[in-house]
Image (cartoon, rainbow, N blue to C red):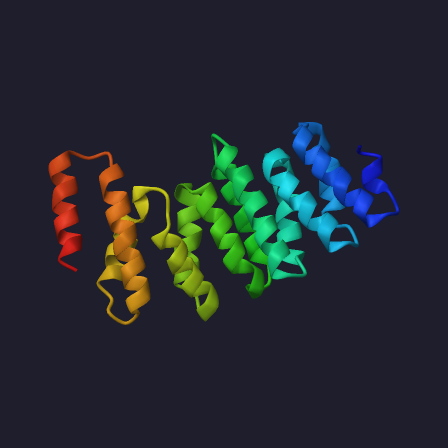
Length: 206
């Protein structure tokens, strides 16, 4: 099957890539990284889809490079999904966050919103610090996406940021997202129930 993935025929390559993904053989990731840069768009998309289930942390730099260089929104989305899936599978995600932050530092502004969303999958102290920095930056599109990423953050460490957003009436959509984020995160805090209730009441007042 791996040999067929190098066939001159694009349809054969695409089918081989799909089969490699279905077999879920971790050793196929290296081959799929190569086919993710294929000349044919369908082969590239199939490769990225397969890598979402097969890639490891060692493949993350290559996936992020594919994301940054993606020639279409569909491929950006597929590369983002693959990189996010890799991060979500890791038990220690700080290394993933460091890799993503390094990629962001060299990435063009157009790729940074997707990289910020991958940081959300990595989570942790390094990741949220980088998102906060982006939210305070000068690029309007990157800043907006960073704020949206904070609103969808998976852990309670984002609550203070969301409370501040919820107090800002300048952007009604972001305020709603921040309030939803607060009410989602407050119950999963590791604090006594009465503190959760008090925090919920404060947010509901907004």
